[in-house]
Every structure is written in C-alpha cells, then in structure tokens.
Amino acid sequence: MIAQNEYSQKVGVRIHNERLAVDISACVHELFYNRGVEIVLFRNQLRDKSSSQILELHQYANDFVGKAISVDNTLEMLQALKLTAIENAKIDIGKLTHEWRLSEDTADAFIINNLSDLFRPSTLEPRDVVLFGFGRIGRLLARELIVQEGSGNQLRLRAVAVRSINAASLHKRASLLKIDSVHGDFPGTVLVDEENMALIVNGRPVYFIPTPDPTKADYTSYGINNALLIDNSGAFRDDIALSKHLEGKGIDKVLLTAPGKGIPNVVHGVNQNSIDKTERIISAASCTTNAISPVLKVMSDTYGITKGHLETIHAYTNDQNLVDNMHSKYRRGRAAAMNMVITETGAGQAVDKCIPGLGSKLTSNAIRVPVPNGSLAILNLQLEKPTSLDHLLATIKGAALNGPLVEQIHYNTSNELVSSDIVGNAAPSIFDVHATQVTEDGMTAILYVWYDNEYGYSRQVIRLAKHYTGVRRPAYY
Image 1 (tube, rainbow, N blue to C red):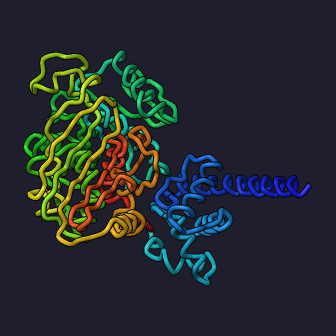
Image 2 (tube, rainbow, N blue to C red; image 1 turned 90 degrees about the vertical axis):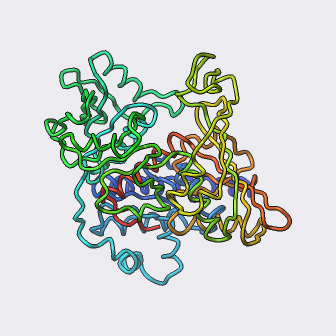
Image 3 (cartoon, rainbow, N blue to C red; image 1 turned 45 degrees about the horizontal axis):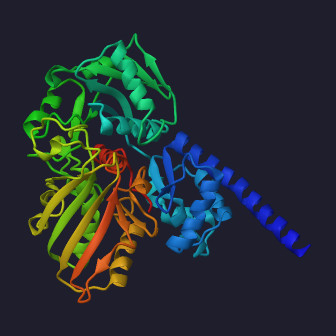
C-alpha cells in the first residue's frame, strides 16, 4: 500500500508539471508571435517543444548547469514577462528565473530592475532577405528564416535568386525544401504558386527570381527594398565579384556564406562588434572557422597559444565525386561515400581574420570522411601558461554558460557522443568534455570540437545577419 501511494504521488507530480509545461509553451509562443520575444532556457530553444522536452530541459538545468529551477517558477516569470511591453528581444528564462530566485524581489520587480534596457521602445525596422542560391546552406537558411520570423519584425525571407526557373524546377525546389535526407521534413507547409513563380512557405510568399546577371536584378519590382542578400551560391568569393549584387535594385548589404577575400570575415560571438557600420559586404567565414574560433578565443585569452595544429574530420561535400571520376583536385575525385580523403583547409589561417595574430601560429589539414553531415575538429595546442584538465574544463564550461560565447559553445558531457548526435545542434562549436586531454606538464592541450557543418553553421549565419542588419536587440543571457 505504501509503494502504491508513493507511485501515485509521483505520477501526480509528473502530471501537474506536464500541465505547467503546456502553459509554459503557450507563453513562449505568445511572446514570440505577438511581440518577437524569443525565449530560451540556458541557451536551449523552448519554441515548438513538447511538455516532456520542456521538463527534460529543466532537469538539464539542474544536472548540468547546476542551477535548479522549478517549472512553477519558470511559468511565473514568463507570465510576468507577458505583462511587460518588451518586444524584439531574446531572453534566457533559465538564467532570469534562477537569478530571481536568489533575490528577494517579486518577479515583476526583478524584471524591472534587470531588463530595463529592453523597456525602451523598439525602433527596429524589419529587414527583407534575398537568398542568392538554394543549395544545402540556402535551403537550411530558408527553413530557419521562416521559422524564426515570428511576428515579422526582424528578418523576412522575401525571395530566392537563381540562375533560371520554370514550373518544373520550382516544384523540385519545393520538394527539396520540404524533405531533407539529413535534417528531416520541414515542420510546416510548402505550396507551389506557378503563376507567380513562388513558394508559399507557412503562408509567406517567397519569390524565385531568375538572376543570371546580378547587376541587372530588380528586386524592387517584387516589393523588396533595402534588403540583405545572403550569397550561398559559391560563385562569388571576393569584394569585386560580390559588389555586383549592390548594383542590382533593392539590395543594401551582402553577406557571404563562405570565406571571402577583400572583405571582413566575421564569426558571430567572436568579432562581430568589429564590423564597421559602413561595411556593405561581409563574410560569415567557413563552418570550420566558426567551430574552432570560439574555443580558440577562450584558450588564447586564458592561457595563450604559442603554436598549434588543426585537423578537421569533415563530412563529404557536394564538390566531391559520388564515384571515382575526373576532378580538378586528385583525391577529391575518389568516391566520397567509400573513402577517407585527405584534402586541405584554410581554416587555421582564416582564424587570423577574426582573432588577429593567432592564425600564423596554426597549421591545418582536413580529412573528408564517408558521412553526409557532422564534422569534428581536433585542436593540438601548445600553451603559454600551464593548466590542468580540471581547470581547462572549468574554463570552457564557464564560457559556455556565461558571457559572449553562450550561443556558440555547447559544453557536451555525454559519454556516448558520436557524429550523428550533433546533427541539428544549433551551436557551431560542440566541445567534447570526455575526449579532452592535457599533458602532465600542463603545456599541451588536445581538444575535440564537433560541429554540424550545415545546420550549426546556418544558425551562425542568421545570428550574424541579425547583428549586421541591426534587427536584433541585446540578448539577456
């Protein structure tokens, strides 16, 4: 009888918490769609999460972050946020709630005392976005831009510029957007509007515009003005070629999703504040540079780096052959899904563009391996100051939980971590705790950093796009 009562009591608590989690979800979506307020819990997205997932994230906060919060408190804080006039902001409800519970304030008073910067009326203007290209990164950007649009007061995907378009290819592009072998189905509706050569994605028209010559493009004829163009085509890589986009009508700024020459290369979280407001063309660097730079920034600032080597174990990409065939580079001509292929990477030197002085200290190489997505960077670093394994792990964990790199570094403690586990992770830099090594003298550290080279990188591009266009207010983390 005692065991039965205990069981019933625990089930009752779980059911009560699941009901609270449903209310939390309702608050999260209301804030997002009505006022453009994005809510996360210790960096983990709460939008479109089930009640069980919300409860699991609260357990994560207790076990990993070490900051226990209850679903009751989270809901109370969210309900207090709903009564404010805050809009177009990003708020970590876990951090906010934890710090509130350590105070003696009411939820309302704590919000007023700590979020005063967000109470200023928002003067932000929504920014139109044009995607130039619709490949792997382009389609993921399209998915995320639509999902993150919310109330429509930040970035709005308006068009995709392609070399040519007709009804048949429009249907094919719709299918590729809706269904993805790696990332699964798009959680929404994708309809084809042949008459207007557009896809209606979650009710929003996205025009497909034939653009064989960017200098002659007229996006204003589609009602698109002052837009950010995100070039993910791979066709243009330097300032001269990319400036062609600015000659077309309706484009104000250009963001390249690859390393660029003659333009600033920016890793959000590391050097985005160095962008001059007058810059009209910038690069989001490469997926590998975005993966290693946040961790290298922490290591360089804390211990100093005398030299190091970067080896990337990278998923195969579209520029490799499916079967052995001619290729401009010898090894990349061999069958991608059957071989480990040694190739070069400029990621080590590229770090210098976002962390000046560090790139010259790094050598780098790459191995393409037979997986379609999910990559790993191994950093072998010689340090200026000695450290211990415990101190190094505490340093990386601190950067992952507080400060400017909380969106970039995911401190992963799983004993079972493999490449498929990191597919769909929004952080560009996933630090593998259990693989980390430090030599006995404390002067050499070997770090393993995983990254979803498609999705994680795409999320970084969108973070940078929001910063670059000025549609994102300071986040509360």
